[in-house]
Amino acid sequence: MTVLNRFLLKQPKHTIFQTLRTFSSSYSTSSPQSIKSDGQNVQWVFLGCPGVGKGTYASRLSKLVGVPHIATGDLVRDELSSKGPLSQQLAEIVNQGKLVSDEFIINLLSQRLQAGEAKGESGFILDGFPRTIRQAEILEGVTNIDLVINLKLREEALLAKCLGRRTCSQCGGNYNVACIDFKADDKNPAMYMPPLLPPEECASKLITRSDDTEQVVKERLRIYNEKSRPVEEFYRSRGKLLEFDLPGGIPESWTKLLQVLNLDDHEDKRSAAA
Ligand SMILES: Nc1ncnc2c1ncn2[C@@H]1O[C@H](COP(=O)(O)OP(=O)(O)O)[C@@H](O)[C@H]1O
Figure: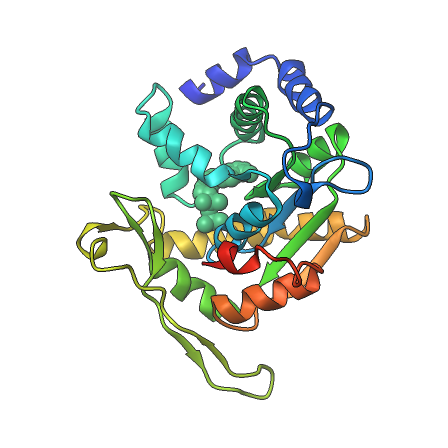
């Protein structure tokens, strides 16, 4: 039995789910933009393949509607960098492009929600969760997700975008050095996504995620199709899925996303997009 499994077996599952349940039933209203007609803050989910841009758009929307952006990939990376007893085993899973177990990720998410609740957070935009049908069923069992935005991009662009990702090791800013320039063909319109280059002060401090190598990205795409693609249907059949084909680079896609979400007359949209 692995160290990770031993750890998970010690976690009382009812506690994990209870934490999610407790979080979902205690709301305060932190920002007028985020309040729905029933008085609760928005609870949205972003789905989409690795490299599609979930982090970029989830982060911008979270600033716009005033709810936290919670990326389970970031929670996993925080755990990895904490160099705790599980980090070596976790690194092996992540660097092979595999998913960590449902129990482990739910535990991390529960802890993050609980910490946020203690700080008075309410509502959320989830990015990278749920990624399996079991995760979706558990989430659906404990709270009501209002909307699931399924970001879509041509497969050739996804690999290039993952390989082009860079993060500034000092300020944490996210950039992308890939330049996507597809000509129109019989099946697809032309698409241009310019690189998102770092400012001069970050240029010498860029790092690449250890799981953004060609082999691992291909495996993550395969696993997305096997494990996460069914989650799209899970939400489609519940009438919650909003399909969104990215039309191009960030300015164009952000404007269109705001239109689709009926947020395009929002006075804060310029600053959120900055
Ligand atoms: N919901 C989840 N279930 C299982 N594993 C997850 C989940 N979220 C993140 N992970 C792990 O963290 C890694 C990085 O996640 P993320 O940054 O969301 O990747 P991507 O850029 O591929 O969408 C995943 O490859 C997986 O190992």
